[in-house]
Each structure stands twice: as C-alpha cells, then as structure tokens.
Length: 253
Image 1 (cartoon, rainbow, N blue to C red):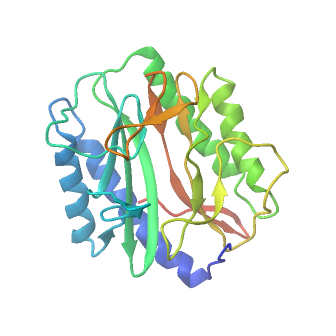
Image 2 (image 1 turned 135 degrees about the vertical axis):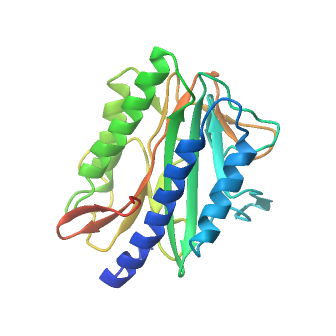
Image 3 (image 1 turned 30 degrees about the horizontal axis):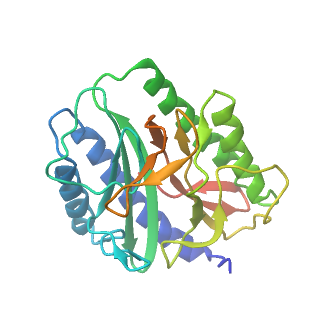
C-alpha cells in the first residue's frame, strides 16, 4: 500500500534527508587511501547521533539476518550492502559506494553516493558520471501524472545507452515512517507503464549501474551484493517527494 505524506510530514522528511546529506558530505571528505571502511562507519554513526537522529541501517533485519553497522560501504565490484570492517583499507584507484539512512522524529531519510579514491581509471570515471546522470534524469521524471515506468526507463536508457547495465535484483522504494515502503522503483522498465505518481508520494530512487553485466551474487557474509563478473559498480540515491510543483529532492543539505 502506498502511503501519501502530508506537507508537514514531508517537511520532517526533508530534515531527515538533510541529515543524511550532511553526513555523506562529511564522509566524502574523509575518503582517501589508507582509511578503513570501519572508520567511515564510525563517522557516519556519530554524525547521525550528533544531529539527534538514529542510524537506520544498524540492526535492520531481513529474513533473520541483522545488518551490524550504520553505513553500507561497497568497494569496486560490491554493488550494495557492503559491511564496514577495520581490515578493509581503501586504496588509490578504488570506487567506494556510501549508502546511509537515518530515522529522525519517526521519519526516514536515505541517500547514497559513489566516490573515487584518488585517481581512478577512465572506465570508472565514466561509470560514475553515467550513474549520477541516470539519477538526475530519473528524478526529472518523478512528477505527478507520470508513472513509475518513466523513472525506471530513464535509468535503464541512460545506463545501457552508454554500454553499461542496470542491476535488476535490487530496486528503489517508497520511504516514510518505514525505511522501505511501497511502491518498488526498479531501475529498468518501460515508459508510461506502472503505478501513476501522485502528490504526497515519497520515493528513494537509486540507480545501481554496472560496468559489465547486470547479474549479481551474494557474498558469504549474507549481505554484500557483488557483480557476478567482477566488474565495478556505482550507486547513487536520493529521497524525492512528488509534489504539485514537481519533484522535491529531500536528501540535500
């Protein structure tokens, strides 16, 4: 069931999204060779708590599995849900995906960025640019009267038009008083298909773009999704409200 949010609820979600954005910018400044993914996790957790918010991912449970950290850190061929570790050290040339969410006054915010560690190769640089552009073009389709398929198609057409692929095993989602709400927002689909968008809907739109094929596999930790072919992946996400006046990005500072 899709839950429409009032103007007041969207304003509270804007504050939750702003906290997420502020913490992600703080993390971006700390991404460098030699930093461990556990150090980034600590920065994220303290950043949320300092702003009177609760990290949304820590303790999140799926089918009896509990995510143990506050931040998802996915490096190179890791697509999403990478678990931070004190033994995972970032190196020059890595790509690192940072996915973060908080709960603030009962409402969730969720966003992700992928950041280069120092200088990266040409394909990785292009992957980042295309995945970021896919998110921007998808958000442009997040307006009342359009359909979910318009968002999905914008992501798929952008990625595949550049010779990349989109992940099909994980999708974007509605967000509100729960981290994951209806509807699902796939990164593939056809224009003019699917649920019609209405004012009051809030969506977490999150392109996951692979340099190689779309297939993924699950790591032994039960959480980390990796590309099946070992090629790199990039992930960007914003929480976006559908309003009478067009898409309203909530996860910005």
